[in-house]
Amino acid sequence: MSRKPRVLFVCLGNICRSPLAEAAFRAEAAKAGLTADADSAGTAAYHVGEPPDRRAIREAARNGVDIAHYRGRQVTAQDFHDFTHVFALDSDNLANLRQVRPTGAPARLSLLLDCVEGREGEAVADPYYGDESGFAVTWSEVSKAARSIVSELSRG
Ligand code: 4NP
Image (cartoon, rainbow, N blue to C red; front, side, top):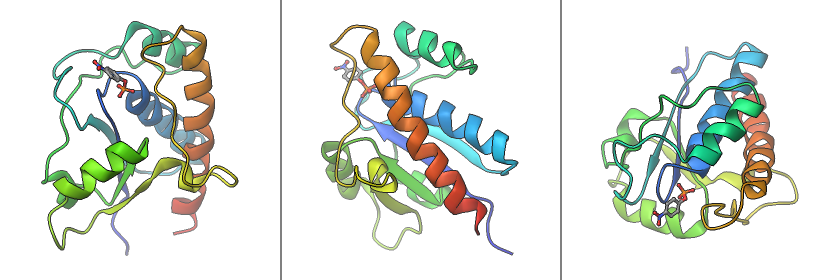
């Protein structure tokens, strides 16, 4: 039997995009009846131990997911052993993750929007410096990716 999927989403600060990606993935997995673990992390340590940005908490709540208890953490080399899949929210973070990844570690590392037809190679734009409407765009993008990942994982 194949290993239970363990999916990690990684952005820069782990307070805006990757917590929303984790939340969207959890929601889509539950909807599909897929058993999987999920977490998120940042390549930077700026917000370690902090809850997500208030605007991200509100956007997740508008979509039925409570993320107020999530806490920021920095990605580690061990994550590439503990997770089966690591998704970077943009190409800068993907490049940083390639540096962190130990040689031979089993996790598959890829860009999140590579899962979304027509968006391959693109970044989930960082909504941190904009207004709250940017968080709805983020939710829409990470939800599309989450649906695609869940459907792929459900096929086995
Ligand atoms: P995130 O957004 O990477 O989507 O969590 C950011 C959050 C914080 C900062 C940058 C991006 N920051 O510079 O503090």
